[in-house]
Image (cartoon, rainbow, N blue to C red; front, side, top):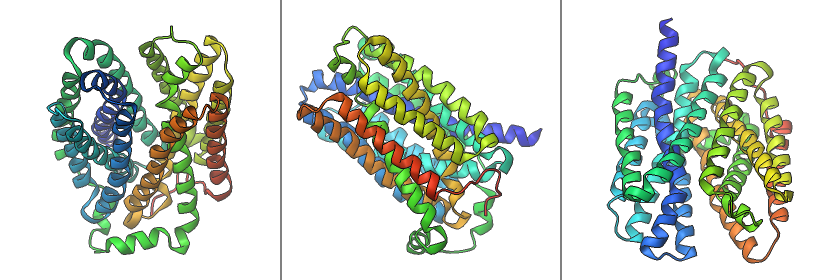
Length: 398
């Protein structure tokens, strides 16, 4: 019983930080809209707010992934959330775009560093037979954060301003940091702590012969998932307007999309220990690709909502499996480095995806064609798992 309590405690402490991270990302699109009116921002300046966040995430995933294999998962777990919380709180005081962008970079670093390190810590702290399920449940806190973001954006921003929304995200995150101070570090990391390995050695080992195949698979998979997720989801409300459905309020749409994420996560949590990581990833990536294709071709409100919800269900389910699968590819000594490098490479896709959509829309490329590109990108990720991936279900971590 005590083992269950400690497992559940770890899940809640890690999950709370994940929830506040998601809340911040979810509120960002609403905050950008508020800033556009307040600071008279151009479309390019608005685009930079999203891009600088992704650049920060790419840097954070790499730097903190490397650091977690040097100083420990717990220390980085605290540092990343501290960086995120302070950055978010300070950005409520920003009065110029330049200051806001600098702070968004640091918030992105904290967020980008936290996610792969949190999944690594949880992976190393949970028994093999339920490791995948617990990491997917950790990922499901992301949907809770988006739900809170939608509610805060609807009720708080119009009445109290975007600054209050940012403070509401930062203050509870400080409580999550307090909870983490009493969390033990991963026993697996502590057992290898005596090995003083250099950062460069760890980077080289990720691409060494024993791990080169899974590293190649992970980098393709991460890039295709992040590229398509940010390319599609940041543009979804705009796409609906372009298709002539301006009556559909963005708040209601975000709410329906977010609710569809939860069964996506929970179904993967149920399946991942039964049919394995590879099968789950291939099924949910294929579902994402087909949903993207049909969403791009939808010409009625009912079809858009149906395929939009399916897109959310399959895509976020795939995200859950991705976070469970990634740390399992490497031994403890280079686990956080490998996970951080894969996530960092994926974040490049998060920068390119939204920019590509903006460019193609400006070139009058049809929404159908744009979503067909995402459909192909996701299929490439599924093929990488099929041909290069190995099954890690219930395997003890080295």
